[in-house]
Image 1 (cartoon, rainbow over the protein chains, first blue to last red):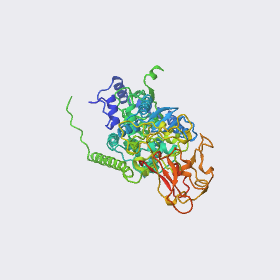
Image 2: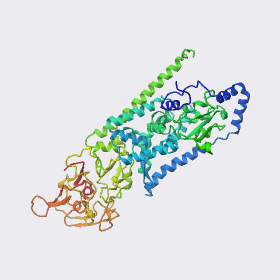
Image 3: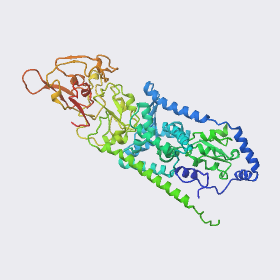
Image 4: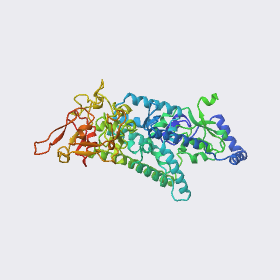
Length: 324
Length: 275
């Protein structure tokens, strides 16, 4: 039996299982849950107060977009203006000479080629440490160019959905884990980096730096699929890069933390979240403890932090936040 | 703990779950099928590319290339470009279109090899990777531009390909014809290092005008020593007829193909051809 909110539960949730239901609750959590039940009037007024005082913010989104654009722009100008700060593309690059190699691309090459040279190890290890410190999937929302494209496609999807022109069809979240395994096996067996052919991250990054090509048609196809049929489908159900970085960031100190005492259970956070299953504790009565870290599938995008009317979700740097 | 019976699942919910499972299976199978379709262009014969110097054998090269384009960024003549979707698994993998812009080794050090982070381009192949007969160069190639340097050789052990006079009838030298003007016309955008202009700065091929009694552009501009020479063509009446003959030193860089003034080029590099 996996305990709700435990590390195992958070990892299994990332791999595709539904979050475990809490059986044992901490005393503080029990007290807070009971309070909401026994004094509904007080809870209702807390909820109303949160709503009236809340000005929708885009603080984290704007910061994130700025970083995402800046990183990708740095790749572009490094080549175009020949300033050589960040040479290469997202799959592999050199930052002022230091090798950086994308974890998933490195994995594909290692499996396909079955031979690992020193520079590949150095670059991969550097990136592993970097994203372990910075939160794993924060790569997705803070760096990946497809994430930004997909966020805009999502806005369009939601606008069309409000007019009943499209509807969201979900897939099993375990599909991404299956893809991760299948593409790993395919790389090993065929000797080709099969996933790289499809990866919109690599295609977009190269298109930005080296100029557009036909491969962008494939990216457009994914966008159309997401707009017309399934919200954020690539990031949610397909992309093995996300899972690779998710695993890398499992023990990362940078994360979003949930505080039950501040929560008014409006679920605004789940509505904006790319991976709403990580926000399972925010549903009324589910949090097993008064404070709960959000699981490794979280991309640290901060949309929930912006959306929460009562400050129940906040970024935390484990260890450091206590010190400050 | 009491044994609770599993909560009854409604029919509608079961149907939803089943539909979602089917959808997921379809998406899974569909995407894997699309991914595997990338094999088709790779398997198709005759769709080969001239790879940058130091490239591993084709299948090893495709396996090890991480598609980052760092080789593209360091090339001083911008000879290297990345392949697009029609190349299937080869999407994002570097190649050289020698007719448009050949590798003229004006970087001296084969910078693209130095830039490669995964060992797809190498100075020295790892021992367990096979070397095809005739791909290995008999001796280190001597770069004509460096001929007077203490170390005139190029750090290259295998050839990229081999130049071949595929259209001898079109060759101006074979016809005994002179050549005047720039090699490929004023609109041609290719670059070449001319030692008498600037050792470190390749300039436009269109900026150089030739006035030759007998066309010898391929021999004249070849960056490698003893890779190509004009030899007398079969005895014939009248004008001196010569034929470019490719030697074993040829590394397959493609400069001869780029500068050949006839259209289409009389001499081309056959990628990965062996001696």
